[in-house]
Image 1 (cartoon, rainbow, N blue to C red):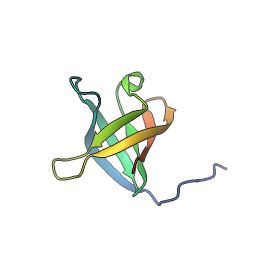
Image 2: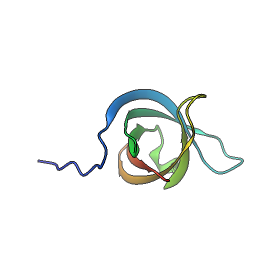
Image 3: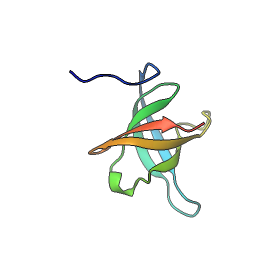
Image 4: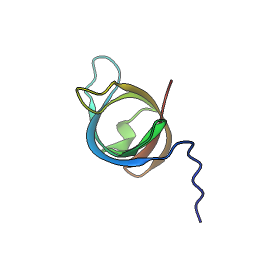
Length: 83
């Protein structure tokens, strides 16, 4: 059985978001499957295009969050929010 090593409980989010990369590059659309205070699970169409660090934007009202990828599994990525 797989052990859950997360420090914070995740809740379903199912939201559309975008990954902001370097200045002058296009954002990458994503689906946010779940999230917690410390991270999230996202899905992207082209995971190879996602760098290890980026800024996640989930809506015009939510604060952009700087992120670091901790795991990759196909099109899904586990990310932590950088403080």
